[in-house]
Length: 107
Image (cartoon, rainbow, N blue to C red; front, side, top):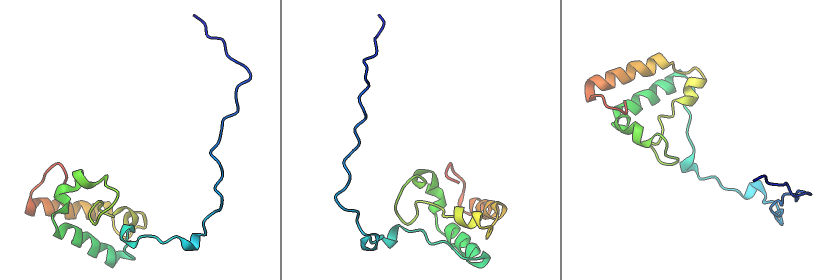
């Protein structure tokens, strides 16, 4: 059976506009959610060492998609993007970590 279109098509209804736009100065960001990015190669190396000094790499697969928390991410993306550290350096640190603490699906 063929369906006949009904004309005219109704205009989509948008949600109502807010009564007032909040002043952005009133917005208080929660600093515990922010990612602190290392500045420079020395800080990036320190961040890399600190990450692999803990066992958080062993649970990376389970926590990588979390939105909040201290160890929900490696936080390597910004320092890789800025060129403060190379993928090869991270791989080398990971290989050393796996030799010392073992490898699993997360590593």
